[in-house]
Length: 247
Length: 276
Image (tube, chains in turn green, brown):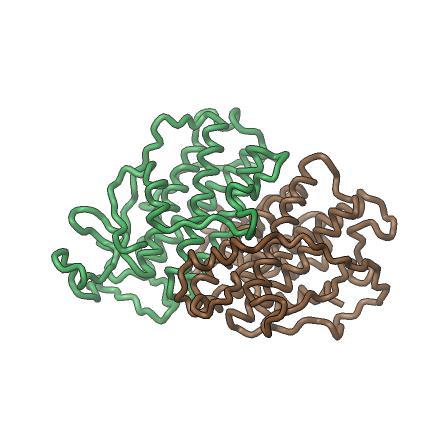
């Protein structure tokens, strides 16, 4: 039975806009679009409300829980964009075998779902999403050949491992336990992804959970702060943005 | 079962209060050597008729960082022993991928036991919990180590199925405990770092078994005994904070894209299946 996969780029603009999400912590979402907090005074950082938004001409991810969610949204935008290009590459069916195509297609599905989840969650949680929601970022992969199995898998591995490290590092930055649970639900899927990609690259090995990512004394996985992750991920992101309120 | 490998046990009270530096905490663990002593675990079939309650069953742990760590350690003991016994049994095919995979997983589980015991303050600490007695045959239902002579191939299939169940349970059990660690950010971070290793394990074991690395709906997957269904019940949800994860690509992709928690009680119930 042919399992036809309809490949199409899911653009955020095709989805419904704001919904009333995330009444999780009793946060009542303002439906009028009024900014609930004080104004953002660039000349007086100590008064900054740390909501995501434009500061000095660039979008800043913001701080606190909404900053962490915006950070996650940025990374998921990158992964979703990458896998969209992977599965839509001109030689996809020839470059990868059936198992690999299934894995990469699933990763495309999952990352797009993650991206749209964060977009919806943030749209509901931000007091004024029209100015506080991270915009659709632009990406550039340079000379990366999406019809090269080795290049695609190597990049996928880097993205997934970085995602795991990022979520592992972000957990402690969240104060709302509901957000922590949601991040936890996603990070294990990213780790399953990372393991599968690594196994596709080198099946006859321990690379799925290799010594390069899992500490050989403690058995602990990689962990990175936002300021460690963003320079890595930022290499593919051409839209300028800042993260001054994230460690 | 590496379910809750989180919580670096820190003896430094400041670390327990989240005030210690992470560097201090990790230096503590830099001094931990690998605990290479393999306990001589008597292996024998229980020969009991199925009974769900044993005096040695564990009780639900408190909803605190210490409680979460204690439950984690218990599950780590289980997985450590399971994989050591598996590697010693001869049922795992040698010289290829399978052996490499399970040697790596086993090394990680052993490291996690060491890590968690130290974190609880050592074996003399009031917070320490001892290793229960495990029966991986579940009263003779299974023979993952070919102890009764069902043959290596059949035994390995059971070993793989139990490994999958243990790893997938571990990932879920962690999520049920994470909120108890919010007050101890260093421990929370360590917990997350162990949890993601469990997920790497789960993915590879599932793929060794011919399944996807991720869980679809509440499917336990081909070859998984019905007794493992509780590990997968609840994984079928397609609503996350009001967002319909099935809208874009269907329920399979939606359910796969998020893993779900197990409560302390659910975790304890599953663990007690293997404790006598």
